[in-house]
Image (cartoon, rainbow, N blue to C red):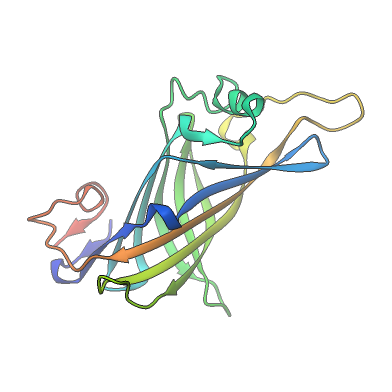
Length: 203
């Protein structure tokens, strides 16, 4: 559990217009399908503006998945994949952050829960600080990327094709872009934050 001091805690607000959660998976062995989640809730806490201290919680609404292909969407939402009727959310909760040697990038470790199964994964995170916005608030951008194998979460169903290979590949490429706004330091005792309450200790 991380311990933050009240006077240094920053809760970053996500700009939904400039943020997106996308994935990429091989389809029919020759092309790739791009998809995204339209509904999610992201919470980011840092000690000051130091993102090496970040605590990140992401809650995705499972049924908001879309590939702009109704047949694929039905598969992804169905009982053989995300099973969105039973499992309403996909959840990522960070567990570690470390500097990648020789780079400015961070390695972000966390527990990813899909269809009721939780596994620890490692992702790569890049951080950029922008200028202040029109309201005088500091902005930052995060790019979080990585790969997972859907079979690790028990999502193994696919259909073999007559020629060779499978309808949908196992490897999923994740791209999570967030534009964050620092609305000012907050007192977690007066304005309880769901991440501060559930994820970190505030002293």
